[in-house]
Image (cartoon, rainbow, N blue to C red; front, side, top):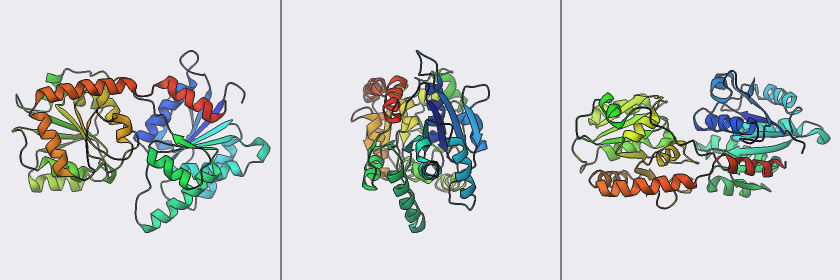
Length: 369
């Protein structure tokens, strides 16, 4: 494949971690040597994500293609639009099941001699009712059998792709975020939250959506045995805000929903314990950031979370088990020595996570460059 490689990334309406990953790849792949390979990177995706994946003035160009999160009559138009864009690419790298299937269909409509290589990264486990599951299985087969390579952000996604017929499937290397620097000191952050002196702070950074298992978090926060004065805060917004607020009020739980925040690193650095209660995760960015900050992390053993934390970088508890989550958090809050030892292990684990060089190396191989 000639250098510089021309890459077209494709994504749908997914925000959050997927959009951040697309932006990270765009930045690292387009960076000139020695920081990166200096490839040409474009993105095809919804206009609403423009600032997230291709900030103005940056090296990455966004082509607006409105890929929805559910099948639409307009998908035919989307495939035609993508077909026009893929003709100028050496590699089409799609993110997500829907975007991946549409990209495969678009590339397969191009004459064989001019087809770019297709790589699809799967970021989420398909969930939902019977109809959604059936559609997802069809899309999984389209992606597995039509893409040249399938990357999964967790081992279970890689196994699913192979079971659906993927000839080449492997775990994606997701760049660990640069070690975040807390912009405010711990005391100032805690004061800004209105915490009393000596209060314990438990922080969760998560979208308020079913995948994040926040019902389990509330179960844990409401269980007896907590260190007196403990406050649980959740930074993030999402569709469950109303339901979670109602339960917090009804059950008088010591939980505050902070909404979307730009100071997640500050909050986690100020926490006594950082918690992830997810039902499923790929390579959770918030957990990676918490490890880099040297936080004491308690997380559910969901999806690829253990692949991020290792066996001892965090305390892992079963998915959906509020009692186990509460016990792990309460134990750490009551034992400063245990928190310090876990924080040291978190920092060591963070140093082992893949960086930009490892990611570029994987993509060079997978792209066939």
